[in-house]
Amino acid sequence: MKKVLCLTIFILLFHKGVFSQTTYIKTVVHVLYTSGLDISDASVLNYIKDVNDGFAKQLTPTFTRVTPIFDTLWSNTNIQLCLANFDPNGLPTNGITHTLISDPEYPGFTPSVAPWDGTHYFNIYLAPVYNEPGYPSFVLGGWASTPTNPVSGSTCSFAIASTNSIPYISELLTHEIGHVFGLDHLSDDAISDTPKGIEPVSPSTGYSTSCSSTLQSANTSNLSQDGMHWGGIDPPDMVENFMGLSFCCSYMFTNGQKSLMQAYIQTYLSGWISSSCFTTNINDFTLGSAALELYPNPAIDKIYISNAKTEQKQRYLITNNLGENVLSGEINNNNTAINIVSLAKGIYMIRFSNNTNNPLKFIKQ
Ligand SMILES: [Zn+2]
Image 1 (cartoon, rainbow, N blue to C red):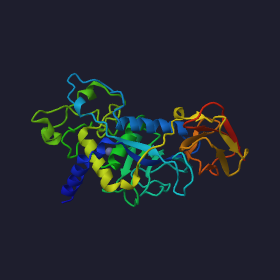
Image 2: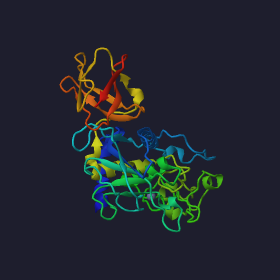
Image 3: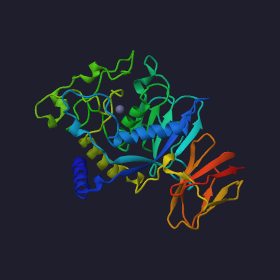
Image 4: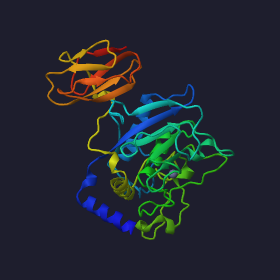
């Protein structure tokens, strides 16, 4: 019954063309770190870019098949993560938090740092993870809690990826996000265009560390697991798929996975959907023009921007003296105050989405 309902919803949405537009997912990344091992915002932004590239069919394939039977299945899912501009209290944020923790996370459990409101934010965690006794640390490098498969005790859906083990953090994170968006492993899913793509994982050595020729030619599947799409021909393992376990080879989702994720998000995770996304890519922002004035300077809790010549909203991005993005949001004529309470004392630069020339620098006291 549930499946019929889901299918009906999906067909209606597909018919309306909803899936040809980008679905932005309001996201917060919580960096948890043990002493001295914090991850910079720039690194987090790179991970998110990799994930978004994977969802958008933008990654360079890790290898080329002699017979390119999977190429036509490779899908731009039209799903993109969008880092939050405001936290649950309405304060501006760049969508990244950093928390010092005393011990690594334990595999499979709810993260030790509370999520933001799980009905309105997709919470991602990047954290060091304990080795399971007798196993290499990357046997369980990441896990996910989903509406239909919650981690015990979890009140929100989240994805967590280990930062201290597997070398393929972006790929692993994309895999876990695929779970949050409703996907199962290729060996267990009911999607017709995803042949089995799993590799055997050795407890002594863990996952493969390179996309070897052996992995590329793997064919451990049988037709009953490969789905009806293949019309009686046994395809090789789809090691290039994020939902296998060959993270070193992975770069794609299929059309069938796109359809399932889009329907799942609309059904279970609609509170996360944003109508648009403000980028925090620093290249999209320029330093303020002479037409802009910033006051007071130095400032304690708020800065004000006079932008009388600006009729439209414009986005801003504040960076610290390390060049890291620390705050972003938007201002317009009616709302020129920017709350800087969350910033540490120091010197900052503020950039805008549609101005050029003179730098605007300010001091937080
Ligand atoms: Zn998995």
